[in-house]
Amino acid sequence: MTSSELTFQAATQELESILQKLDSDEVNIDSLTVDLERASELINWCRTRLEATRVDVERIVTGLEDD
Image (tube, rainbow, N blue to C red; front, side, top):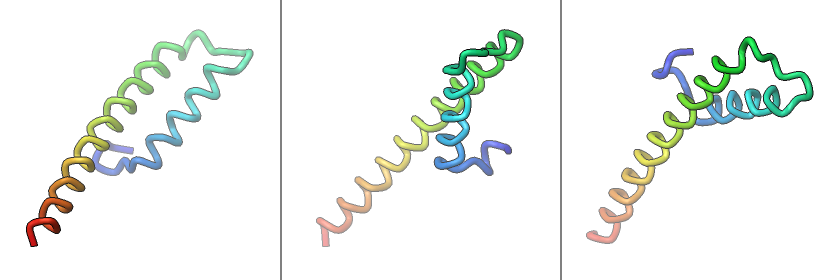
């Protein structure tokens, strides 16, 4: 899934899946770095998406207040 196809829900679900793997008793050391890098990418993507949404909501609310 490319970043342009990623949704917030899909990102959080993938993060949850990674966390479950890391929380298991049988952590795969061979994929640990890859999983952590992907989790970091997803967290950064979610932060950016949340900030963009916050800006949009503030703009919309300000527009309503100006009417």
